[in-house]
Image (cartoon, rainbow, N blue to C red; front, side, top):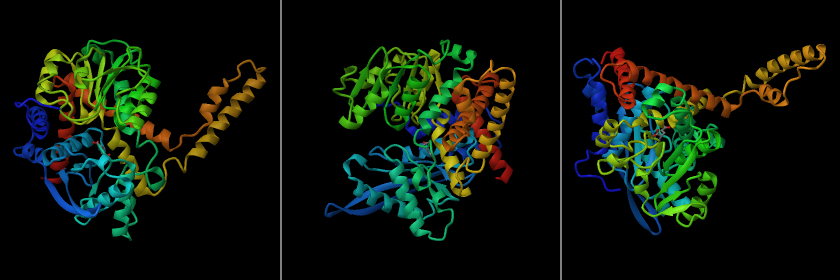
Length: 477
Ligand code: GLU
């Protein structure tokens, strides 16, 4: 992706967005600066013996704000990782956690590596060594700093990190809470893998519950039948596209990937396309859609909703004016640069910002962390009790019905659904839905009512920054 020379860096972009919100808040002198700056960034260079020679890797863990601890944020494996990026992402984590009321400060880590170049055993060696370097400096710790998956990492890396921590802290009963996004059989929680994409779906569902907000984007109606372009069919884009198309009736007209885009005006079958990409490494040759070589030009196609779900800065000064989507939801972190943001706002585009839109991941991470600290799965105590109380009602209704001659009998579907108590996955989804609705309400209140706030991003930052500021002020800083 080439970006315009006049474009600020990712870090500067986040700071510009922060500044706009901070200017609307009456913060005590100096506090604005204290919140904006990144507290610390640790850089490590370590060697791992691979394929007969020592290879040196560079990694980072940045802590943006410790107003609440532990600090939280993913670890990314990508060749694009650098200090500016990690610091920008750590800052976004602070604001994201504050907005969705996850009790964490912001942090982020990254390793400069292309994970596709290494096999599973090599990646394990590299991950263990990186984790070791961070653990011995308390940059991974259940009470201080809790990583999670991000681009290029997933359940496997998190399980390795958790295991490495447990080996180095054999008597820490809360060891499993040192990292989230672990596989369910290794201390994880159901619904974490889908969480960020699920959160994007819930964010859109919530947006479409508010006719006045839908109208601001020049749209009407519901998600049903809306034409959607998804950029990036990684974990987040895949789940968001899958849920929107399978559950909300949205039509995914284009999917953009590394090697081009695929189009079907009647809607792509996301599961089928995802299987193809997993097998072939890209979209080229996919038989059930039209292939377009120039993927980034597809961002400028007509649609109702554009979902950038991959890299930062894909919508920038060079293409912002040509973007036709009236509604953009930032499933990725920082996909719209500060300059592009202003061009789009000028055009009336509504942007559901990253700090809200992709907060589903950290929200479910929060649930996982709580589960690890409480050492019990959600629903274990209540589920059967809830079922037996529901059974009482069903029995009573059936008794009354029989008494009245059986003419009002319940639909079997109702009975089956009502009788089933909520398991961990249902509870996680319910908690995530509630979180997304509450956070939207907080942003919307500021968006509609606060003088000088013209967009959802500024509203989100206003909510988040004022919460972080209150936390610092309560501590007397
Ligand atoms: N990496 C994800 C994010 O950017 C998740 C972070 C977490 O779960 O701590 O929000």
